[in-house]
Amino acid sequence: MKKILFIFFILYSVLYFVSPVMAQTATEEPKGSPLELTYPIIPNEVVPHTVTTGLPDYIKYIFNLAIFLIGIVIFGVLILNGLRWFASAGNADKLKTAKEGILSGFLGAIILFSAYVIFRTINPQLTILELKNPDAVEPVVLSGIYLCNYDIDSTYLQDLITKYMNDDQEKRLSATKEFKKIMDSDKGKCFRVNGSANFLNFAFAPQGGQNVKTKKTLFQIPEKHYSLDEDGKTLINWTIDYGIIFHQKQDMKGKCKVFVYDYKDGRETGAMEFHPDLGFNAAYSVTLFKKVEGEPVPESKGATIYECIDFNNASYCPGGVNHAGSASLSTEGKDYEIATSSDLMNFGLLTEEENGNEGVTHSKIRSIQIDPENYYFAVLFDADNIAQERTCQVVNKSDNNLLDDPIGQCGTDCNSVINNKNINAQELNSKCFPCTKSMLVIKGQII
Image 1 (cartoon, one colour):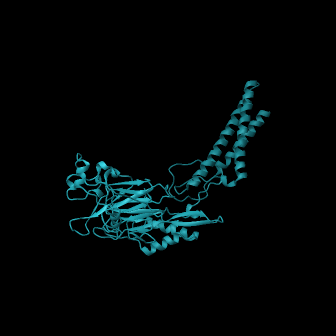
Image 2 (cartoon, one colour):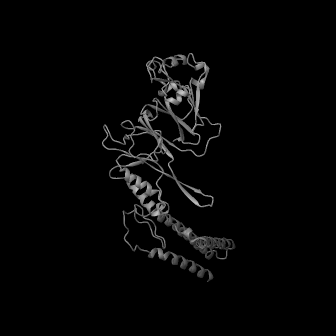
Image 3 (cartoon, rainbow, N blue to C red):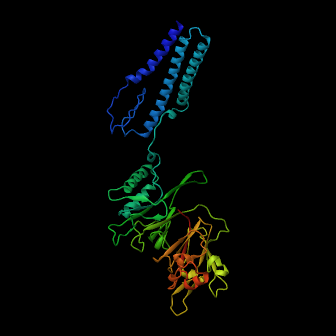
């Protein structure tokens, strides 16, 4: 009789917990396209119906479904072992096995129920799965340089960036939403420059021009930094951490235009222009770089330029050079350092032509050493001043022979020997001379 009552109790419990599942119906017509799968219904839980159902709802559904299925398994274990107990017919071993199974089932149910109760007691939020809109917590637009394939009003952009940097959360949220509209507008698209690369099916022409239908736009989102003052109060600083070099040709060749953080063309500007004058029609590749933190060790030299190949190896110096010159340029706490043709002439690495052609100069820079690499890099120009739109070359690693590069291949006879693999250093020195007449050393890392 006790066995019959026990089995009846188990069956009643199962029906009690399963009946809400069988009775549950949809009370509201779901919106959105129907799902391709039909999800099982579980008690007191909203079942995903359409593709508009959010990810948190799916996670919550799976979480509760797992608990429900584990509960069904536990009840199944109880029923199975209850039947074994009922059918044991006085067999001591079968009775013992059934009792152990029933005990295990009850222990499993207690553990499952206790775990849920503990979560609810310690922190009810642990059982509430909800994904908040990240913009509502902290409105964020990734810092960096953005290029747009359409014209955006400069005043509007400047006001929007100022609005985004505002301490008022509502204004920042509003600015963030506006930036997202700009990125994907009916007029065109904007993309973040993630690294140095060639443009594919795109030419950046910020002022329009030949074969370009509309002006393109450039803007930079500042980086937000947090710090503490002496009283422990949180301070917020906005900084321009990225710089960019636009190149006239692919593979970072041809003329170039350099934007060093908030600096351009040898003068402080305070901000990057939205429609800058590149000095050439359009850019087809870019070099992207970012500020580096801290200062290098005191022994670091920055960029050292040498008169001879292989860092003034006497065996590779041109004829008549007995005391090869060199000079080091470092930023010394600044973001950049400039060396014009006058500076290079003072270093003895640039000379005026001796045939009476006043103002005609020749460079002597045949190798360059970067120390440390990935902290400094140099931009070499074949013009007297870096503001002139002339050919340039970016050097981010030490190079013991610049005559192998375009920036080292000037001279009317140079083209006849640069592709000759058998030419020796003395012949190369006699036919080619360096082109570098000004340079820019930047504290930053090329990305």
